[in-house]
Length: 407
Image (cartoon, rainbow, N blue to C red; front, side):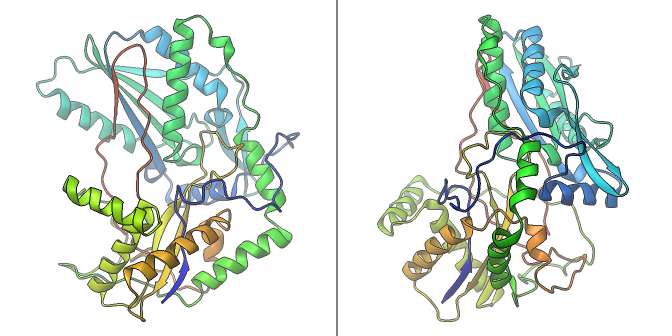
């Protein structure tokens, strides 16, 4: 069995090539370039003429006595702290660049009342669904918006929507934590205790353009060329209808609850094999997909956090899709699959800085609208607990209802 490559959010966290310089604040040129991932989202948004496919949304359910004035100040503080929330994107001679507004920009919060709705939860879900579909203007901004929905005197929902160019999934935890800290500090009259962030996302973009060249670029490129060259173009699974010839941006969530006893057995097996829960579940998924497809070689994707650098404590776009190519032609045992996968996790983490779109350019792969390139199935183990905000009241975070995108 050959395991060509894998990576995952929590595996080998902190792995960083000694050859790479640390990220630091540097003098800004007149035009700050986009990061490589931002360039891809900018291109897609321009191509499609809209941005609703590139939104990240968070909903905080706030139960208790909420001080709306303090919440407004906390949101303003959040925008002041993170430069990227004040960033817009323009182009000159076809080349995009980013512009940062002054720190006192603040955030306009739209307020809604659903107290008279017959079905509060249904009305809230519909509001959240409509909100995530409203496009952003990348050039005019802002690329973050907030709606505070009153459901009762002691029950509110704060809906925050950001464009993917200034956020990713893991940014939600930073946003929630910072918002909670600002809210409580303002109530206690000690908001001035927060230190200025040592680096901003623009510093990361400049750092990326400086180091992702020469030998560093060659090492990353060589690795992904080896992983992706000659990979199977599509994973065909038994379905009840033919694959659409064009993208279909809708789907459904299917929940499967495992019995606590089975869950404990899986965790125990992971410990006995000396691996993480992620690698254990990933290995099981690979085996299932191989049997369903009848293939002994397949490629699946997984989100790489790309936050191994200690300087990265920012809200913005760092997450990077990564490919796992596995050959099961030798009919490996689970132990061998897990052992090889675990070793590949560490290797791939050391090469996750190259954006997926850049890696695609290294291999000759025919493109079609019928399915995504390289992989059509992605695996993510969301075992990172999203921290609930504490705004002086009982607070609960809940994911908004959103279609599952199937490629």
